[in-house]
Length: 160
Image 1 (tube, helix red, strand yellow):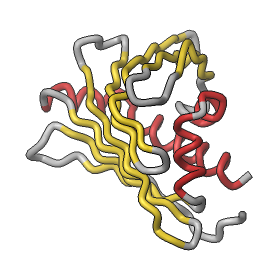
Image 2: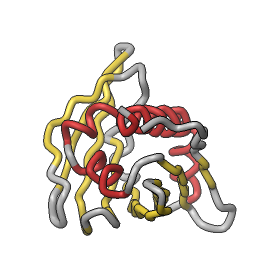
Image 3: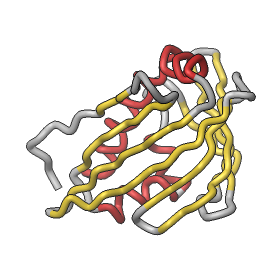
Image 4: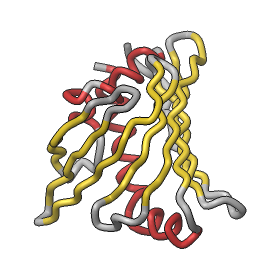
């Protein structure tokens, strides 16, 4: 499938709640976008900044499962881990997310896969943290570049 439109990643940071909401549309049906989030071989091909390699320690994307992975590059290594609280095929993933460089900063994340029809999907990812300071540190820590590059890479994967 070839896209003639450019899908943009929107990152919203509300002033009144310590959360980050990321919205992105993809030129692929929800089942394919969802699979790219639950299949560890596919996740390793798109998640993270282009300049970093992803190494998966474990990735068990099911209700009650967990994950841990590393992003490695430029002499740095960043570990991430969490638990999958609810996984509904093609619809929803609710998980925790912890960057091991800030182990007390746990985010609760909800990913919703919305069928837009015509083989398109809107992904809405909401990350809630326990303080505005943690949210602002998360955003200031280069999250925006990693998120935008990840979703560009995911779009490339889905259109192959």
